[in-house]
Image 1 (cartoon, rainbow, N blue to C red):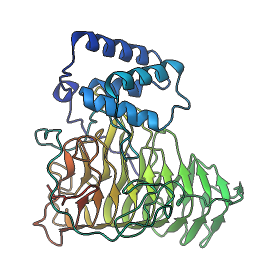
Image 2 (tube, one colour; image 1 turned 60 degrees about the vertical axis):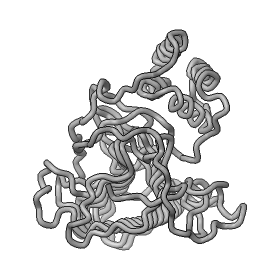
Image 3 (cartoon, rainbow, N blue to C red; image 1 turned 90 degrees about the vertical axis):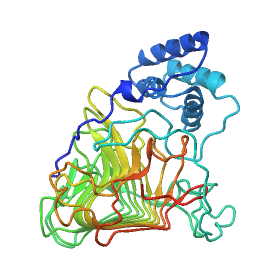
Length: 417
């Protein structure tokens, strides 16, 4: 199994908490609301932690965005807190066009620069995209959001166009949880194995719901698999990569939950898929996709949107896309036309492999042939995608590295950092 790496925290609450410039009366009300929320440990902790590091405008936007996602499952007290927050700080605001909530900053595993200002930089001219699809062509109205229009005349993966196709009749999977027969096909099944251990070549999983399942071929060098038109759902668990290993292909798949949606050790293709909704526990660091070598990720929506952090354990998101040389050099990865959703619970939206101080940082292969082209980065509530910016640890001077055509969702060129 792939071992989870818990990188050291590089933040403390004192280092990231902002001054909330409001009157004494409003401050007292905010403290009271947070205290009330914390008394509901089942689902209100995210509200309290998210509020702790935000200025009034950010807090108002966070509350508006959170309510827009629905309040099913929240306690009455948490719902009341949300309504009060919107009334005080969110009047007149509309939900941001993003699938991830606004919140405070999370721990992240590599050295960081000083915080950038929260104000959005002035957008520079952006490349002229293809016209968006005609109204109603995508399952979700809007542009550069999950299920909405992309810049090239198509639709981003999201609700309504990935996962188990509508109308598919599922039956219970009764086969083995360890697959040893080459060419095995699992189709239109509900799979509930805790781990679907692929130990054979050319296994296919199609039009299936994988509930609380970690799919991996990490235990067999000769294994390979394809998962397509399927849904993988996990809660918080000790380890969930949740599709991981090597020599795998992911097509039109929704991956929701777990601490890492997908982990490519080597030779993986991920296309037209939606990686989101991570669930963390303990001291886990989450990500949407972690790359090591020979990853090809094309036209996906990627985010790590776990909505809060814990300074004590350093639990929280690292980035939408991570790639740092803990276990192997990071190289030969092609990241093309993906949508990175804004996530200020992370320091950056993507890592480029050139992190210092890691076991393989000095390997000649590390941070080479890293290709990032025509990706779209959401600006989000602070205008920077991540808390500090869109990208870090990308070294344009290294062999084979390309940074080209990467843009903000609302216009302007994204620099490599």
